[in-house]
Length: 148
Image (cartoon, rainbow, N blue to C red; front, side, top):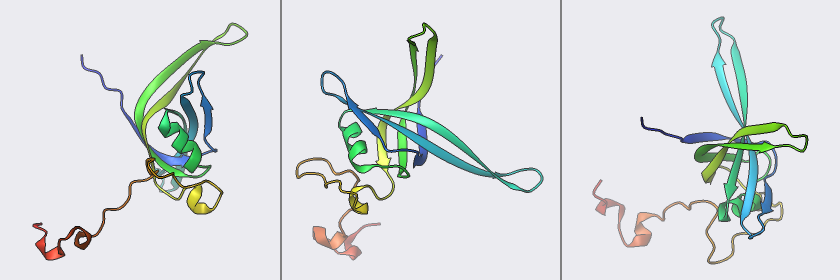
């Protein structure tokens, strides 16, 4: 039987990202999201439901999340479910289900554009957000030359 483990979430951060580093120097960021859903009940009243999800991301993406995201930031997360299991100090078996992010897309303004002191990405580093494509005339094409 085939398997699929894929998660797509869009919501807002409930707190600032917590970035830490492994002994080998790899960045790990824990982020917590709130996903709101509004629906209408059978009696016609509107109801809002909130789901809270823990997300972990690794490497350069973790560092970028720590640098540019803050509480309330809107994000789109693509990843997979991951079950963590451990034994606590009292010998109790514990587990938690969370999302391991493979991609975090920033949907709104980050810390740097809000003037909270984060420096913009240095030259040569990846930009935190995709930039809009340049207008057609900047590439030597007139809009009338575009075949669609």
